[in-house]
Picture 1 (tube, rainbow, N blue to C red):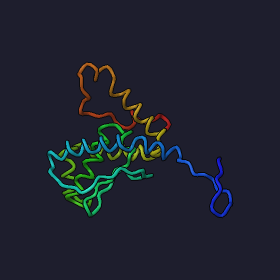
Picture 2: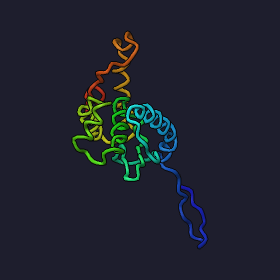
Picture 3: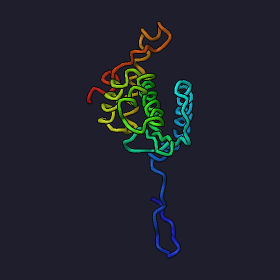
Picture 4: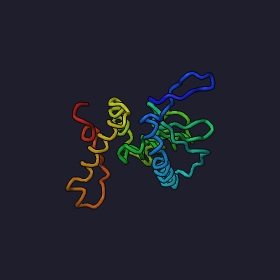
Length: 173
C-alpha cells in the first residue's frame, strides 16, 4: 500500500478503489442503458411517469421506487437473465401506480409478466447464492447455455417458457 504525507505530517494510506467499486463504475452506464430501454418498452403499455432513474451499487435490493416517483435499480440487474430483468423493471414501474404489494398491484404486474410468481422464486434462489459478481456470472452463464441450446437455435427466438432457476444456478445451490 502506498503512503502519503498528510498536512499533520503523519503518513496515511492512499485509498484505492476496490474491485467492487471499479466493477460498478465499469458497468453502471450499461445498466442504465438497459434499464431505460426496457422502461421505455414497458411504458408503451403502462403509460406512467417517473422523475429520475438511478443506478446504484446495493448489497441486497434489486430495485426500489420512492414516493417521489424516483426509480432505483441495482447495477447487477445487468447480470441477470432477461426475464428476471424485465420482471424487476415491471415491478418497480408498477409501484408508480400502487406503492404497496396489494392485489391490484400484482394484477398490474401480471398484465405484462404473467409468470411473475415463478420469477420471484427464481430471484429468491439467486439471492440465497448472494449477489456477488461470481454468483451472478455463474447464473448468467447457465442461463445462456440453456437459452442457446439446439431448440432455440432452430426457432430463432427464445421461447416464452423461460428456464427455471434450478437450470440456471450452480449445482451446489
